[in-house]
Length: 398
Ligand SMILES: CCCCCC/C=C/C(=O)SCCNC(=O)CCNC(=O)[C@H](O)C(C)(C)COP(=O)(O)OP(=O)(O)OC[C@H]1O[C@@H](n2cnc3c(N)ncnc32)[C@H](O)[C@@H]1OP(=O)(O)O
Image (cartoon, rainbow, N blue to C red; front, side, top):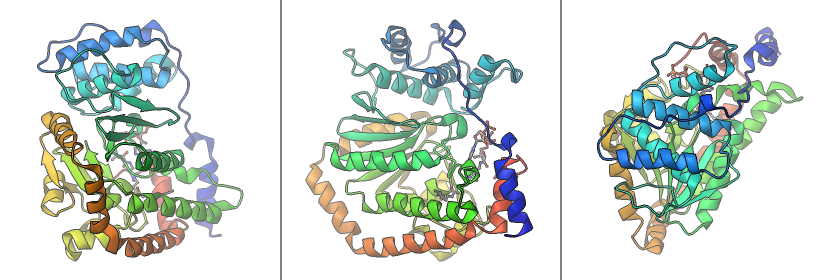
C-alpha cells in the first residue's frame, strides 16, 4: 500500500470527515406558516396543501417536516435570504440547511413539490385540483431517501435527498434497484425517475468511499464494483418504458445511465456533467458505448474524457435529451404529456420497447461488466483517492 493510500485511509476514518445528520424535535418553531403570497394557477392547491398538513393524523417525522418547511419558504420567499445560524443553534441550523439546500429552485417548482409532498403524505384527496399531480395515489413505504408513488398508471421514483443534491448513497443504490423491481411488476405502464429540490442528482455520494470494510480499500472497491454492475443491469433489463424527468443539474452516474432510458425530458435549468477524469475515474452506466452511439465519438469524448458540462439545449441537440421545457412550466407540461402516454395500450408499449432494445442487451451487459472492472482499479488509484479526499475536505468541487 503506498503512502498516499495509507494517508487517505487514515483520513477516511477521521471523525471530522464523517458527518451525522442529527435529530430534530417537532416544535412550533418547525411548524409551517399558513399565510402565503398570492400566486397564479396553483395558489389554491398550495393553500389546500397547507391546510392538509395541519390535518395529518400521523407525525410525518422531522426529515419530512424540514422538507415541508424548506419548500414552503422557497415557494413564498424564494432562495434562502437569512444568515446561517450558529452551529449550536441546532433547530434553526437544520431549517436553514434545508431551505438553503434548495438553492435557486424557482418558487413555482417549490410550490409544486410542496403540493406533491403533502399529497403523498395525505393519500388521495376528494378535492378536485387544477393541476396534474403525479404521485398522489399511493405511496410505497420502506424507502428512506426515495419517495415512490403510483398514480395514473405511472410509477414515480423521486430521489428525495435535496439537501445533498440527491447524491446517491449505497443504501439509495439498493433502494432504487428495489423500486425498479417493484415497478417492473406493478400495474403501472410507465416508470419515471426524477429528483426533489433544485438538483436532479449530483451523482455518486462521495462519502460512500469513507465506509471502508475490514478488508480495506480493495474490498471496498470490489463491493462497489459489484453494486454498480447490479445497479446498471437493472436499467438495462427494465421491461417497461422508462422516463427521466431531469428537473435540474445532473452529474456523474445520473447522466451516464440516461442512455438506457427511453425518454429524457429536461428543464432548461438542467445541465449534464460527467467529470470522470477530474475524479480520477472512468465512464460507467454503459456510457462508453451509448454516448458515442448517441452523439458521435468526438462529442462523447468531450463529455466523458474532458468533463465538458452540457446545457440542456446542447444535450438535446446531441440526442441525449428528448425535449427541453422552460423551467416555469416544466412539471405541468411533462406530467400532462406522460399522463397522455400512460393511456396507450401497455402491452404494445412493452413489446415495442423490447424489440427496440433486444439486439443491444447482450452488448450492454458486456460493456457494463467491463466498465465496472476498469473502475475496480480506478477506485484504488491515487488519482481517485486524492479527488475524493479533496472533495471531502472541501478543497474541491466540480
Ligand atoms: C457503488 C458505487 C458506484 C459508483 C458509481 C460511479 C459514479 C460516479 C459518479 O457519479 S461521479 C460524480 C460524483 N459527484 C460529484 O463529484 C459531485 C460533487 N459535488 C459537487 O461538486 C457540488 O456539491 C455540486 C456542484 C454538485 C453542488 O455544489 P453547490 O450548489 O455549491 O452545493 P454544495 O456543494 O454546498 O452541496 C450541498 C450539500 O450536498 C453535498 N453533496 C453534493 N453532492 C455530493 C456528492 N456527490 N457526494 C456527497 N455529498 C454531496 C455537499 O457536500 C453539501 O453538503 P453539506 O451541506 O456541506 O453537508
